[in-house]
Length: 243
Image 1: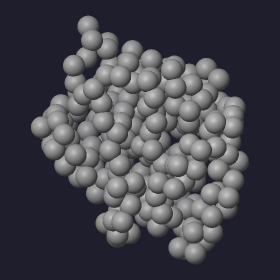
Image 2: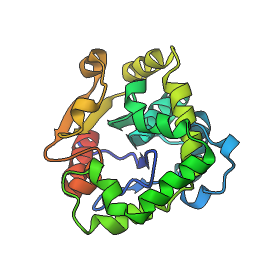
Image 3: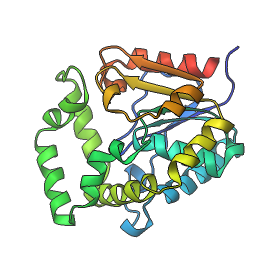
Image 4: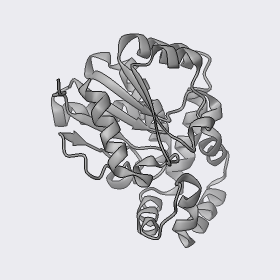
């Protein structure tokens, strides 16, 4: 049986969530501080505010749902927080290497601790060689990924990353966060998707593996698996949401 709910893709800490070849009804909104919302003030950017932003987007685009939510990296944490706050809006969740513990926030946490000048300098270095920046998160840093990396790096100011990094630590480091996640697993089908070369660094607890509705690892892929193999990436999501 094929699914009928539209899919909302929630991008991660930096850039967008490229979903080439996903022809079923979907949307990939920019979060606060990104893309068309890049001018949102620093103090207005947090994971809880992203949840409210997502709710407003779903209301406007899909009439308050229900939708399937696919979240990558920090977007995976936002997807889980959204499902906790608004369970009636969500049918199913695909969590793509989303934050389970502070161990999953190693980069965002470090950016959150930076001063504005330090964060600006970091982004300047990345933008000077976009392909080098993206190479650590893909299996084969082919030349065609350079323009994609440049587009991702231009998608948000450094101040957005600082605000998000601070909130990731505050939210996922809260003692109540694991309980919140487990409650979402109990209430909704949650599917886990990872890359072969990044799965070992994803801190998925045993209870999540036991409770998940499906768990799949994409071969020869890293954390940015949608760039490593966009065909396999879209196919995996379609399989999850068609069950």
